Length: 200
Picture 1 (cartoon, rainbow, N blue to C red):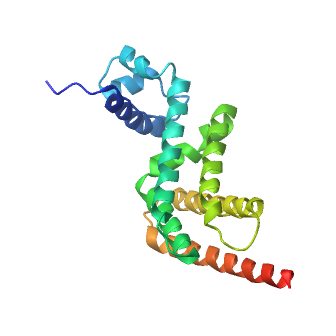
Picture 2 (cartoon, rainbow, N blue to C red; picture 1 turned 45 degrees about the vertical axis):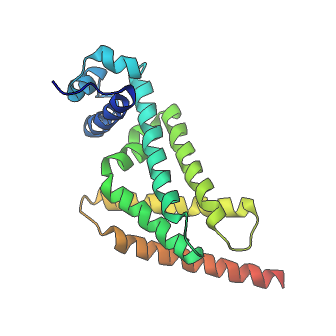
């Protein structure tokens, strides 16, 4: 008999199984029985960790969002300059998308957009990502303008990722990151130049 999982390990296992189950059938077509069966546990065990299907899905959105934001912030933590931060951030983002297709689609897919509560969870993730990126944007503007630029970068990355995944073909994360990183860096540099001229 395999060793019994700790509560933390069991929760992580259930979230991983739920991700694949929801991604395969969608929120409305997936039941708690489906998740429990896929995880090899009884439904009461599942309810020990999550009060309802909605609670499980909400926890899953939070978990996926946290992992995405952590991947980007960890990659940029020790970058030496703005360009390096930009390059590392895009590379981490698109590698995460390439390696976590189901997670990205769950986070930014239909069910998470239509339901107001789930949409709010996605907005929190987007805001967290922008909050993490904003201080890295050193273009001589105040914090509010930094945050606006950060939201623009997050939106651009999401839109590009959505298109890549909708094509259903593998993509080179490094190549895509280099392309968008170059675009973003050129824009930030131009913004810095324009700001400097305006200040003269």
